[in-house]
Image 1 (cartoon, rainbow, N blue to C red):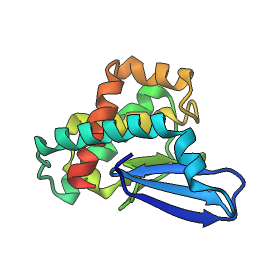
Image 2: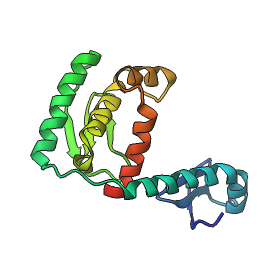
Image 3: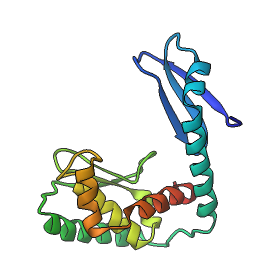
Image 4: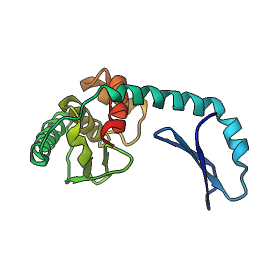
Length: 172
């Protein structure tokens, strides 16, 4: 496979594979053979690692946007107001914090958490992140129904998802 593999054993029932920035992390139940898991998922892992490498290359050509924390907060809050009205959803609170694995999240209670590093993203990606998270107030999971909601505003969402992933290597 050619990539570094880290194995962690936990009290879990099923194995999990994480690919962060090109490193393979196997999280396994105690006693599970890592070679067996790697062999069974080899093609999937190689495909994902190839995608990560492509995104890393794309990230080289991207420049972080210079935007103050205050400008960022103002932008996000105005987008939350606009998009929540458009979607007919109610947002409880908006939080800004550093998140290690995602750009944003939305709780069942309507709390939106935005990664503070998103301030370095171009405005169109911040718009997409906010809309994406608010769409979770309509459809919790990434189902076909969820993506239909997202595609009403952002029909090219797959390319935006890829662009966000590439930016992760630049500012994440």
